[in-house]
Image (cartoon, rainbow, N blue to C red):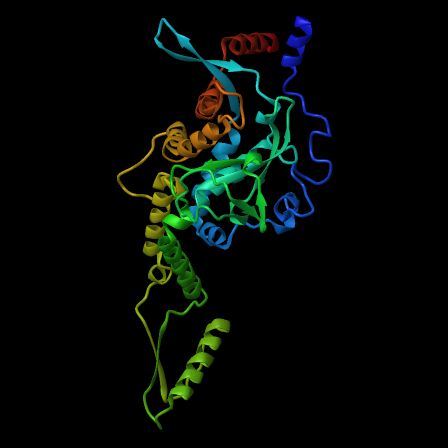
Length: 377
């Protein structure tokens, strides 16, 4: 009996039988009356949110997001316990065999996809949501699916600051059971809430640059020099026709009573290059990434190696979100008490060193090359 009990505990991470999971539908809790759960997996209804989509259209914000998402998605998760080390008088990590979901939390997508988009929600909204789609025999989650934060509403918290996991969560109009949710909370306020003014300014600068780039002729003034005075409507019509001619031809025609006086705007001023650079610098500040990583030179900050650039990106931008994700997945509703997960950041930070070592010739390679040269003589 003791041996049988031991074997049962050893296989506690196997999936539960089908009758323990939902008999019908995509996720546990499926009900014909529960609109929210019914819509899980109906991807045509998923929305990232208009405010998020406007923010991501800013090139510097897009670049900052992609850089940090690429780091989050390439770092694997490790599971461990902590034991007291009497010699060093501190807690020591003892790494464990990972549960199956650590390698692929959502069976329908690869690991990097769900991690990158979980970061995306934290970055823009300050929170992210996973729904538990199956559990193991010990009652802990076995698989998840991400619910976009832009499709979530919480009636007990209006935001933009999230104080704790919500107990009243609605997805596509239907309420979800918080017991089946993993709610990630960012230590920082979501970008769309913390910087709406900066985002709008960046979008207006980009729109102005597009308008100025649509014509090869600098902006100017059409001035009537003689003849019968024209009405406001007539002047408006002439200006519109002149702009249409400029847009389709390199040369526009005027009569003897009209004179075109171009402004002194140079191409770099027309494209608002300085304004665009300042907007990108603001976006780097908002995204918590070093400016040089989004292509902005500040003159006083530089990096000296690709390895240092990796470290800067991780320390200044990624680490905050990585620890928020790992800490949430280490909570008691996901793993047994005393079991934790963390991202393997060393693998990301040391990858450059590993590549350098691969490029360096080893003693074995030197000996083989020497013997080959002798044999070819």
